[in-house]
Image 1 (tube, rainbow, N blue to C red):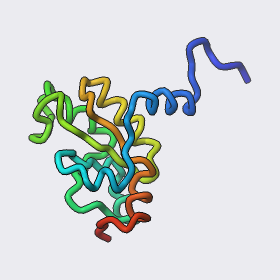
Image 2 (cartoon, rainbow, N blue to C red):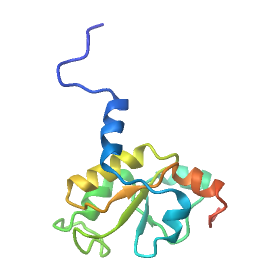
Image 3 (cartoon, rainbow, N blue to C red):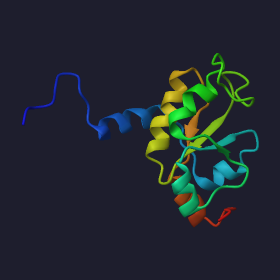
Length: 130
């Protein structure tokens, strides 16, 4: 086995770098943000098993950047500009941190993620559909 190539980072380092740029929000704070778009990036099988947050946009991770880039032909109607507030969530809040950082790379400076993901939201007793 060879050592890590020059410039390579571990996933823990990549995650820490992504999170250092985010102002992550907890479930209650996210629930109270009326101008934010909650975006569920979990795959359909995970949503079916865990449940969903009513009103959240369903955009699986592999489509996220194309749907939110204001200059993309594949953008959604809600991608009205670079100042849109997006709170991304996954199951536990790991993949969503990477996804929110990717949205910031597109210029969506107000993008962030939900600390603890869907599981934390449900544990807080916030609205969920099964």
